[in-house]
Structures are given as structure tokens and as C-alpha cells.
Length: 497
View 1: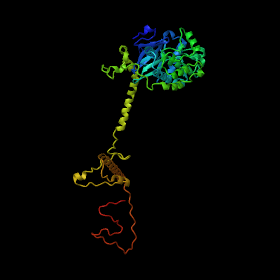
View 2 (view 1 turned 180 degrees about the vertical axis):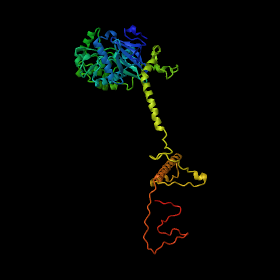
View 3 (view 1 turned 120 degrees about the vertical axis):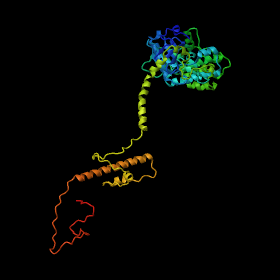
View 4 (view 1 turned 90 degrees about the vertical axis):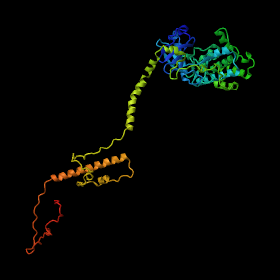
């Protein structure tokens, strides 16, 4: 593991956690602008790459703007062949950083250095994947302006194949004018001179997507021959060669190449943009006939994650930090995870009682009717008659006089269904008992009101006039009610006056 303090005076060290979520690890690479470190998200456990600018450049406005331009540009592109950017921020000491996907593999210049000239189909496959990534950038109005092997990365894909990733959009030019021209200032010429188009050297303001087509032509020439088409001992010599020397054919440096492929390379290296291949899409269509028709071969060997299948592995529920495990062991990562998860725990704790209450309301039993209810306004009355008394004593209990509404009588004497559930039968019997009790209370109240009223005064009726000769029929013991003036009354009944 390389020590950051030895590579550059970067303000971070292995084992440091930045932004409370990214654990810093070993150095993956570096350059004149900054350094790239391995990292891991503390809570998710996913590997990331953390790119930081050198401390001596944090006050350089152009360098900082180029760094932030790379973050904004890459974050806006979502294609498979663009290295994704997840986050961006500034350290407490003032250095900006960006967090991007951690790629496992090697840069194209390292691969070319180790393998020499590539097979014709393999070189074309790499150019086609680069065209696919640049097509998305051009559609978004961006020109990369620095396509070269060092900015292309051969990354291990999810399967056995290899996927090419385009890196470093730091000097990408926005074709649509912006309020802040920044790095697209017409007076500045940025890029690597070996891969820069003539117009990019002479008139940076006129650069468009065809400048990337020129760079792809240089790249294809280099992949086929392991040489650059325009070279020199100094940067001015390289620029003079690009501007004045005729473009060479790849077959001049390597025999056996298809002449049609020579023609495509020469069309990419036309010094006048109007005579050059117009777009990366057109270039891809021209190169399709020379492609292998297969994904890029696995150039990185077997996946280390699957190489030692017999070695013991940690439990699946244990957090894994990969190469950062020794660093993570010295940190209080559970405390960081607990602090991040505390709001979620509070929310769950507040919602749980409400959930329990809702379930109880839905599942609770219905409230049963009271067994008895007093009639409104009548107050308490005497004890109702025992309905089982006739069976217990054998004597009939006289039923009190009741004034029952016909609808009430119908409800009381409603027929019972042939098949009735026990709970329905119990509820019906309680209702009937309550109705009978209310009717009995009303009858008792009416009876007490009648008994409390005074008896009406009776005045004797005048005797009817009759003939002096007429005489009432004699009363006999067998018929004592012969007198028509007497009221006919049935024995044992009282006057109803």
C-alpha cells in the first residue's frame, strides 16, 4: 500500500473518514492535478474511488474549476462507458474532492505497453466502445478534447467480458454557450499535443465534436502499431508535425493491415475538419465491418472475488470492507452507523403504537346491548314479574294491563328464524326482555296515575215522570235488576265512571 504522505502532501491519510461516510484507503494512482485513493462507503459497504486535488492547487482557480467541471460533466452522463461520479465535496482544509465508481482493471496505455500492437479486431472493438461513450457526451453538447490511452480504462465487467470506461472530463468543452466560459476560453488550448487536432491548437474556440474524431484516429493508429502518428522530442516539434506533416498510414508501420482500415484512419486525420469524418457515429458505422462482433475479451484474468472459492469467508451478515478491513478495524464504525440510523429508529418507534391501535380497532368485538334499559322519563319502578313463576309455583300470575303499540307488539312477537345462530338468539332474547320490561313499566306508571286521581262527584238523576197508576215491576230474588233505571252490570265488575 502506498502512503499518501509519501506520494503527495494530501490532507488525508488511510483510515480517515471524510463526510462521515467515506473511509479512505490506499492510493490507486496520481498525476499532476491530484491523487486517486481507494475508499469505501461506511454504511453501504460499497467500494468507491476518491479523487482529490493537490493541496498546492486548491488556491488555483483554473485548476479547481477544471476539477469541478469534471465532476459536473461526468455526473450528467449515465452511459455504460462513462465512469460514474456519485458525490462531490470540499474538505475542511479547502481541497475539493469527488467520489466515483471504483474500477478494477488497468488503463489502456498500461495494457498497450504490456501487450504491444493489438490485433486488428481487438483494436477496432476498443474504438467502438469509445465511440459509444463519446456519442452520449456529444449528444449532451460536450466535447472531451483529451481522448488518449491514459484517459481510457479497461474495467472488469459483471461477467467475463471487459468494459471500456472514459475518464477525465476535466477539460471537456460545452458546445452550448454558458454564463461562465471558464475552461472553454478561446485563448486557451488544452489537451495532450500528441492527440490534439490542428484546430484545437490554432483556434480552440472553433473546436467541435470532430476534434474527438481526430483523437480517435490517432488512438486507432497507436493501437494497431504501438506508435504515435505525430511525434517529436519537444512539444513544439510535436505541434509542428501535427500542423504540417502529412498523416501516415498504419500499414506503413505494420504490414498485413486491411487497406480499407488505412483509409478510415486517414479520413479521421484530415487536417481540415470539413474533410474529416463528421461524427463518432459515422466512424462507428465505418468500423463495424472490422469488429470481432464479440464483447471485449477478459484481459484481466479470473475475478479475484471468485478465485479462491474454498477459502473461508466471513458470515453473510457481517460487514465486509475488502482491502480496507485492517483500516476499518481501528475505527468506531458501528457508532457512525448508529448515528446515521437513529432518525429511522425514532420514526419506527413513533409509528408502531399507531399501528397497534389501528389493528385493535379493526379486530375488537362489537359492543353488546345492555340487558335492561329503563323507559325514558319514567324513573325506577317495581320489580318486574318473574316469567318463570307459573312454572315454579303452579299458579297463574295475572298479567298486568298493558297498552302496547301494535308495532311494538309485532316486534315482541316476531317469529324466530328456523335456524338462528346462538349469538343472534341471545341478542334477540335480550331485546325482547328489554321491550317487555319497558311496556310493563309504562303500564305500572299509568295505573299509579289513575289511582292517584280523585273520584268524580256523582249527582242523582231526576226520577223519570210516570203515570200515577203505573208501578214498577216487583223485584224478586231471582231477578233483582228488573228496574230499567238500574244499569246492567255483570257480576263482579266495578263501575267504570
